[in-house]
Image (cartoon, rainbow, N blue to C red):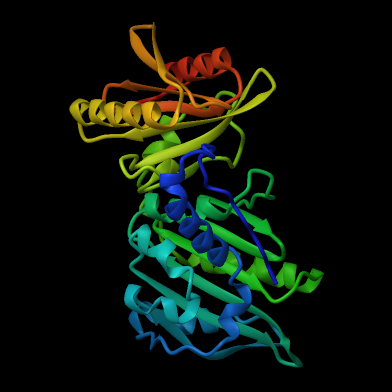
Length: 327
């Protein structure tokens, strides 16, 4: 069974107030990243209407010697738990609209199957968010959709407002080939509005680790005031540094985030320092075993987290502030 785990934890071990929230996030993420075989359990869902001929299109994607199992099913937000119980909360956090599901199995051996899921997340940013949660920077990339990757015999693709999964029962040469064909056909059949995702354009590309960008609609770093945030990994002189940007509604909102972070840092860290560079003020937080830096540039809040050396944290934050593309 496929198993994936992507850690989305800020590194403050002494922040006990976040313990419950972090534990729940880990539980949901683990369930989300390991539910391949869950699809084979019983679930209800709704039969998909003939809108745009979707059932016929998907059933028609069955490879030679394979067949569709049952009907094409649709799961609304309130029924999503029926098929991914324990992982639905993650999709709900990104405002999922519905999910279309169909399973294909080999005619001669039902133990070999590929489960196909199409999540309508309502917007490209939301679809990218759930897509990014499970991706690791070293996963092999795909050349269709906006972005995609392969992991443990299964394929994960983001295209516009859609997030597509082709989850195989095992890792074999045949399943890899058929899963890729299915993923490509389904992805090509979906439309893409072309709407841009702000964070992917705003984050600097220089020295950014490919495939490392993640989007958090809420609770980035486990902090309820960090919303609409993107993180990415950067190479800073051979050291990997995690940076983030968060777009607020106004400069006043950005300043509120900064103040709330300072209170948080003073409570759980060892104090802060302030330095100015290129007309911006940088708040340097000593969190005991690492340093964080936060700043705002207009209504964008940015910074770096959990860097072992103070000066490296500061220089990385300054580089980030200079490379941000737009608001």
